[in-house]
Image (cartoon, rainbow, N blue to C red; front, side):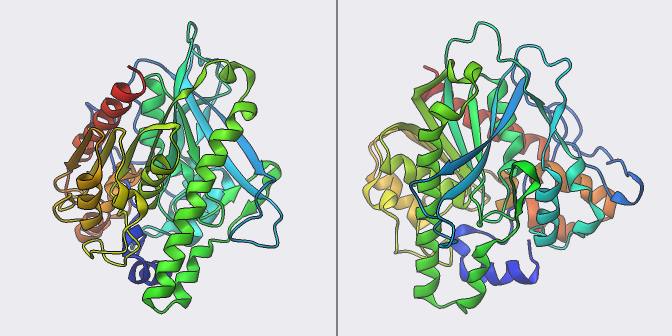
Length: 401
């Protein structure tokens, strides 16, 4: 997202890769990724997400969670921390249950205003019109006795819903997936009743001027807040889920994954919390540094390693041999692990950009170098298929037996 704000963020925090939280672009796994978006009057280009590849339709509910035991770390005048989550799950019948929007209107407006996508004219896109393949309030799949629980943390400045492609797919394969908004870290968070928190306090990076110590302190705070959010969400779900989901959620089988800073948080949370049995990091560096290849200043997860399964999935050129913090994690870990490099991929290939950017390229005549900077040169269909396979393999093997 090379807007002025993003450029400053990138200079200050390369480790979180906030410059390009773009995502993978495609149609269905066997189909074309180059479908032309529809236009709707003056509201702009309308986009489509890839259908999940599992055998179940997907249901969804949203939840407003309030941590009354924690003052908001970004807004000290707020006496409690408020979060929004979406829960995806395998559904039974979905007829009569509408497909959920990827972003609610307020969240979509905040996403467009921040414009985290480099050189994409956000005001020409109808972000609120994109539908997921999850159906609101659909009944849980008949015969379901227990579902492993997997939490998703997005990249910095991305909304929770910018990882819908992988979340819906995992739900279609028999997982209960919880996608988490980190308030005041995301572009915008819309709460029940229409209240929208559009303050993204990671713009504080602008005030650092690239100062190493100030940047490092802000990166450490960002990680700490996210890990605390994930821990709280898991605790709160036991009572916050609707009864039909509370009966089937298996909290003895918990996993986590995320993109960029979200992947960092997922692995750090597993290190800190024995309840997390497996985690995947989608191109997130595990150190408090400004450049991905910079050694030192490692997080405790990299210094200590972990004894449970994990996946490191990097863009082209990212591996334990080239990302020092990944190398540290692998060296110190005793748990089974895989590291994969997605050739031709960019940092944003691990978000919904992989699916959406090709459509925008067609509709808005985006230059090839802009598309490449956002999602690389990897084939979008192959990219999504590879990510789905890798995540399903990790969580099936470690959570679903």
